[in-house]
Image (tube, rainbow, N blue to C red):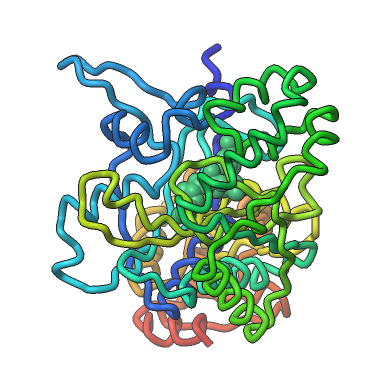
Length: 419
Ligand code: HAM
């Protein structure tokens, strides 16, 4: 038997309406904040991600689904959207059309990670990217949008963590200090952290290894090395969050796993989903567009994992949305009237009602069972004495009331169902 690839999920119909509702919520909130949707291809040239995200990152060095296509080009299924949005921004000169581009997306992503609860190989993100401004208001706006969406879902067990990585110059000074601090401990670091020592020293803060953690406990912190302008930027972000009633904590060890960040980085974590607790992550990336060959245009953004969010909702018993019931289930009393039933059903559907009927020649009892299964608000009986006298019999399934409508009076019937 052929099965789905490990780390991928089928979203079956009992779940897909929750996905649709979530997408509706995201579309709605993004439109309140005046963000416009962008859709980019599922695959891109591999070099976009290696240049954009950074060769030394876990995503690029270990997790990308890359392949050589028939013309010999290396392509990669997108592991994240920021680089793709940046590429589209440069390619279509979006800055000429709009001085500030506020964009959002909902899209599948692909990373060859070790699958576990909340971590998949095909997963879905929604997110936003703003290109064209250095305003710290926008750093805060990213956090606020994500927080608003999570709060609208009903999630409460949340923690907003923020940090500042400052600018490249102060970061380089800091990295030298961190190296100095770690040098005497080098042989006690885990193998992974020894590798990171040269290629991506900040990521040692992310290590889950006990020895690494006890060494890093006393390490100097980047936030202590920020230049004045970066500190001021960070202070404004914090002030705006306070004024917006978004509770947060500063986590000076939050370095994030992608190379393009500067200034603000943040994550919102949930206490309801186990070890893969980051529901979203993001930050500022003022150098990315230039690094990918565009003009120096600043950017900031975030992305949230939809599977993790829905898992958090399930675990907190919130966002328990019931699928919309059918408006009408047609009950066929006389099999000769199958075509009449189909015609009437079509007319109701074309008038915007959710309607279904039996296609399997089932008994009246079985048809009634179906009507109940779909939670249908009404049943419409076709056949019997009423139909012979030119009437449909409509039955209200919750109260049991019955109504007769002339078969010629479809509009009257539709009005009643819509009431
Ligand atoms: P990221 O932290 O790599 O950031 O991913 C963002 C979110 O996607 C995570 O917080 C998590 O909820 C979800 N996610 C990531 N990997 C997986 C996975 N394997 N399975 C399930 N969910 C996952 C980015 O992708 C950046 N592009 C965010 C950003 C936008 N920064 C600036 N703009």
